[in-house]
Image (cartoon, rainbow, N blue to C red; front, side, top):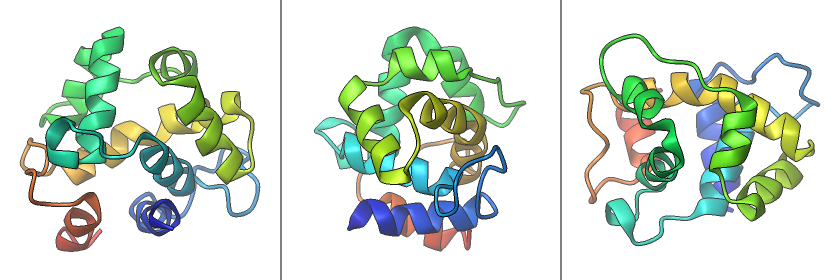
Amino acid sequence: MAGNELGGLLGGLLGGGSGSGAPAGGGAGNILGALLGALGGGGRNGGNPLGGLLDTLTEAGLADQAQSWVGSGDNRPVSGAQIQQALPDDALRQAAQQAGVTPEQAADQIAQSLPQAVDQLTPGGELPGSGTSLEDLIKQQNL
């Protein structure tokens, strides 16, 4: 499905995995793809799942971190515990299940890989417009 395709694209973007003990096939790109698929586009950010994810993190008190990933400066870190608290339980559980890891492992992998992924997907310091899907942006950036 779209989450699996997005996971493959994100896996390429992130160099194929997180190297944090994830099982085969459960790399960071797959986790992020599954998470974005679980969150869906929603009505916010013109249906862009990346924007929806960043909105969710911002509303959970992680605005400084999220903005640092989009901006041109250093990427501020986020912990797995912060990711777990910020994300809807069902979305994290679904992403973890698709990646074959526990929700705690998924949150840790997301925390490690999300700053780099967002940074690379927002080269101009802005989220893609409402007419651009995340998949299109990845392809346009040759990531």
